[in-house]
Structure formats: structure tokens, C-alpha cells
Length: 350
Ligand code: BJW
Image (cartoon, rainbow, N blue to C red):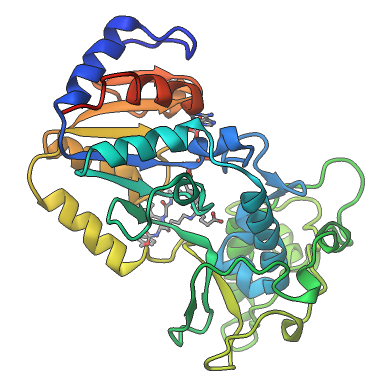
């Protein structure tokens, strides 16, 4: 197992990887946010993963949606805009090239930014499975079944127009210095404790405030870490101002992405299960993911069980999870490494 720098990949390792790639038919690529990082899109768990200084999972979560759908829509409106303004990078194009030459290639992507599709990987070809949805698909938040695909309208409504987010988001409660980092987990914890303290009848599930946190302190509760002030993060947007489901007209539209605690799309999971039930898998590429989010974090081992050899491409060694002796580990920027290892002359001819 070698650990080369991107500009100086170990030739022996690259050569043995290429040999295996050339002889591979069934190839699975597990993709994460690091693939799009070279396009300028932030990853989730890096230092630049805060949104206006707040934990992204406060907004990208069912709890965040219940608390303030306007805030969630502001977050996703920005993400939609940023993704549209970004361009696919050489890593995306290298994967598309691989997909063209290897019909048994399937990308299992956690990314919702649409960059792989824009690089040329057809979402309907069967070679791309979007595990966590797509920023440009909308669905009825009430579950009436309405889906609006490839909706690139911006803004989706007046209150989501560019430039309005920053002014609205950081509300009262954040005082001086670095705002405390709050998380959906914290809010869930606070709600759970308040439910216990108040009893089911008196408890009303709403936006938690600094006041909500007070009983926890009085009880000396140490299960939930309570920051000095829970910031009042509010969009100030009324539900009526947001996009509504045109079919049932009873619920808001939401971005059709998968939040924690939500199931991955059934049809996609059926396809993925089938992939791992079919014949031998020759090669599993794990690219730009921290491998912390399930069920995707388990796919590499499932591929191994089908005989796959594994190649990792990641900026950080820590996110290469339990590599085996005969894995390939290519540390560095996917946009530099993938073109070198996947599309060098003669590599992809079978
Ligand atoms: C570079 C680079 C460069 C940087 N080149 N590399 C089993 C055990 C324990 C928990 C669970 C379990 N099964 C389910 C769960 C619960 C939960 C979960 O996984 N929790 C863990 C965190 C513990 N999973 C779920 O809830 C999933 N649902 C589910 O399983 O339903 C059934 C169920 C529910 C509950 C219990 C049991 C069963 C749903 C997961 C949904 C994840 N959603 C998000 C948001 C999507 C929408 C949006 O985009 O807004 O998906 S969270 C976020 O994480 C996003 C990502 O797709 C996902 C993965 O992150 P990713 O892509 O790996 O990014 P990072 O930032 O983590 O890493 C970037 C990597 O790139 C790093 O390694 C860098 O080094 C690298 N990098 N630049 C190469 N240039």
C-alpha cells in the first residue's frame, strides 16, 4: 500500500492499479463531497463546513425543517445557486470518461450538486445512483407524492431571492465573538428533556430558545451540553411566503434530499442491493468521502465481500477507513489524481 502525493504518485502503485482497472468489468465508485470540493463547493465535515457560522446540520435536518422551514429554504437556495455557478472539475470528467468506456461502471453518489450529470454522466443511464437526492428536485413535504424534477428556477419565491439570506439569518441571541455552534442533535436533546420535564400534554414542539435550555441547567443535566446562549436562528419567513405543493396545496415543497433519520430513496436502495447481490465486483473506488454516513459507509465492505479490490482517493489519510494491505491509497486532490489514474492513455481499453 503506497501513500503518494498528488503530484508524485507512486508509479508502481499507479501501474498495478491501472492493470487491475484495465481488467475490471464491474466497477463501483462511492462518491462524496470531496469530489466537488475542487469545484469550490464546501464539504460537510471540514473546517469550512459552517453556514454563516452555524452547524449545517441545524438546517439540513428534519428537526431544522420543523423548526424553521424558511431557514432551511434559505440554506438550500444558496446551495442551489452555488452548485449552478460551479463547474464540473477534472475528477468529474475522469469518472464520466470511465463510465463511457466501462459499461459495468456504477457511481453511487452522495452528492446532490448535479455536477457529475453536467459533466456528462446521464442520470437515467443506470450508471449513476443518487443516494442522497438532488438539490434541483423538489417534493411535497407532506408526502402527497408530488415531485418536481430538474427545477432550476431561482429564486423559487421572492423571500428566497439572492442577498436576502445574510440579512435575515443571524438573529438575536448571538452575542459578540464566535457564535456558539448549535446542532440539530442539541435541539432534539432539549426537546426530549423538556418533554420529560413538562409531560407529553404540556409539551409543545416548537423552536427551542435559550429559555428552553434553562430547566436543563437547573436540573444539573449533563446529558445534553447546553451552550451559554442558544442562538435564536430564525429566518423570519412565514410559511405562506414559501413554495407550496401545487398538487395537494396543503404542505410546503421541500428540497428532495435525504436528511439524517430519513430513508434513502427506495428505488435507489433496491438498485444498490441488486448491485451487491449480482456477480463478482472487480473494483471499488472510494472517492472524497469521510465514510461516516450510513448506509453508504458500509458499501465498501459489501463490495469487498463480492471480491472487489479497493482504491481510495482522499485528501486526508484519516478518512481512509481500515485500508487493507492490497488496497490502493491515493492521497491528494481528486481533481489531480483521477485524471492521472483513470484516463491516462491506454488505461481504459479492455
Ligand atoms: C477530498 C477533497 C479533494 C476534500 N479530493 N478528497 C448505522 C450506524 C450508525 C448510524 C446509522 C446507521 N444507519 C443509519 C444511521 C443514521 C445516519 C448516520 O449515518 N449517522 C452517522 C453520522 C452516524 N444515517 C441516516 O440517517 C441515513 N438514513 C438512513 O440510514 O435511514 C434509515 C435509518 C435511519 C436511522 C437509523 C437507522 C436507519 C440518511 C443519511 C443522510 C445524509 N444526508 C446528508 C445531507 C444531504 C442533503 C444535503 O446535501 O444537504 O448527506 S449529511 C451529509 O453527509 C450529506 C453527505 O452526502 C453525507 C456524506 O458526507 P461526505 O460526502 O462524506 O462529506 P464529508 O464532508 O463528510 O467528507 C468529505 C471528504 O472529502 C473528506 O474525507 C475529505 O478529506 C475529502 N476531501 N476535499 C479528495 N479535493
